[in-house]
Length: 366
Image (cartoon, rainbow, N blue to C red; front, side, top):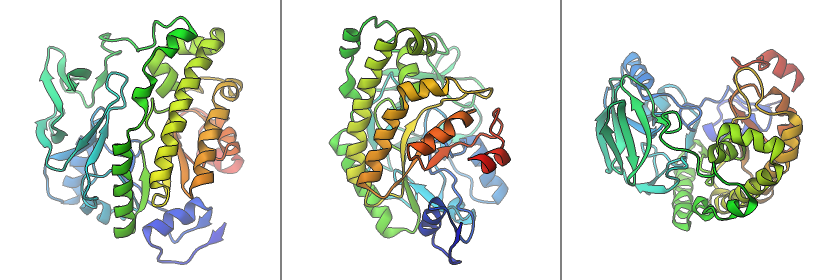
């Protein structure tokens, strides 16, 4: 590993680490992605512990009730990386994009800094929610609605919204498809990112690139968000999708072809818009593991997913200098060499509590 100069700026520190050079210190992230953030209640307690002002917590991920981290915390903890879609300082003077990563409402919302209201969450903290979200008290707790569609319920005393499948109030949109023709009839274009959204992301990325020293990450991937759990399992249901991969392969391939077409459409739009300014971009949110082991075999990964990931990553590498990151929870050790083979730069998380994810083993073997 090469050694870098001391006193690097945050952006250079992150780039050096991703180039496998030794930076002046380990880069730090808190809240730059929905997968590296902190729950609003924990964040409130953190601010209290640090002796910072207590105020309603801005929520950046509605379903998980994750906090948008304020600049005073970024500065105090020496955080190096931020999301280009921030709505708190440092922020760009352009609308904030909320995307509901939900098969019930996959739409995008433009929200200005003034379009929030304070809601007392059932875990006892005042949070700021975007005005297009309506919270209705129901028997089980509190139901959340977006554009008139219910997306989840947070139980009384709960900490986040439970999906409707857990409440048995809905079923996946492709649960009943029987043929490739049925798959074609689904509105796949609804997952394609709109030009106005891409332009907002571009303006935000350019502003933060020119006016801050932070490393910038783009979290928006559009589409279903991935191929396996974010794609097939969300669209078909977990049990049906795992069965599709074994006994209904033509149907699985048809669904994956449509997902991949949308994912490639979106990645081209996003790379062309922000690739000049952003250092790291997400490619998918796709949990391939559980705490006890992988969901699928390496052979299945190679058959259905590897070549599709490779094309996504290849486009990013060919048309920008951005590093790529994939979110995939759980025990994913058997896939790590596959990820390296297709050019992936970052795996999130390294879930050391999962079977086979011992950090010493990973450091030695990978």
